Image 1 (cartoon, rainbow, N blue to C red):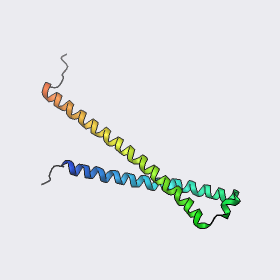
Image 2 (cartoon, one colour):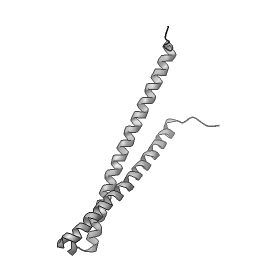
Image 3 (cartoon, rainbow, N blue to C red):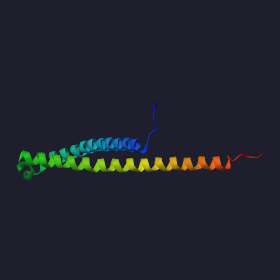
Image 4 (cartoon, one colour):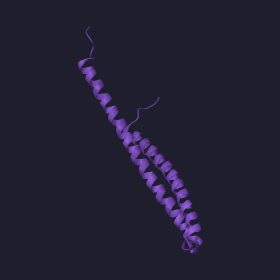
Length: 113
């Protein structure tokens, strides 16, 4: 026998889905920004004697900083998009419930032709 979903279960599922969406955003953002950071690092190595003179630890720090920044930005973007989608779904469900209640109260509109 399945029990109906209570509000806590639904909120827990939404939080789980939101966290997964943020994780996917963080991974894709870290990858994209990591690639861009590596390309800029390669360009810096080829062009700049200052960049070539930096220690390997600092170069790794610069690379990781770009990846962390990209991960944070993309995770934030994805979580905001997920929130917008969930608000839209809730609004549609509420509108459908109001319309169903209206139809039950006043009856369905039928064309008299």
